[in-house]
Length: 212
Figure 1 (cartoon, one colour):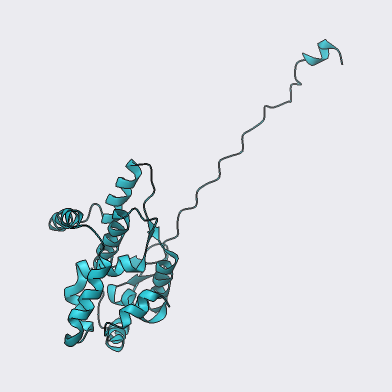
Figure 2 (cartoon, rainbow, N blue to C red):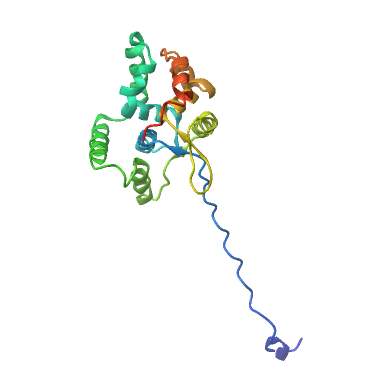
């Protein structure tokens, strides 16, 4: 091949190489809705996982969120004689230093008084993680299984534009943790005297409107 052939101009119909379009990131599909109470407890669970720099939100984190936010209401599913034992179990799940505990609770109460409709605890922890170059904790496989089961048994549904979505309540999710998902946390929870039959009646009763 001569030197001239190397410098020969490209044919008129030649086109420069085209870059392949970047693959689109799939948007996670929305499969359920949370009541306001469950959303707050779930956000507290994310805060607890974030406070220990965990990669995943565990079932124990969500139970701790239930205790922090919903104990006054959920306590009715434990016999009075088991109340102290149940509280000892839940307090053991809230592994957080007193200083950090007081800081988070004070900030959380302030958000609640201001309406808590702008940013959730998950938003706050996600923003905090992004500043340090880390990702926010995601639900663990066990916790995802809990929500998937709750979707199947929930008697309540919302009907947005994209179709019918099950509405999940604290009681519904607590029932799934205590009855349907086989974990060590489930066994410890059931040893506290939780009245599963009473809880199940409350979950499947169509006359009980979901809160929030």
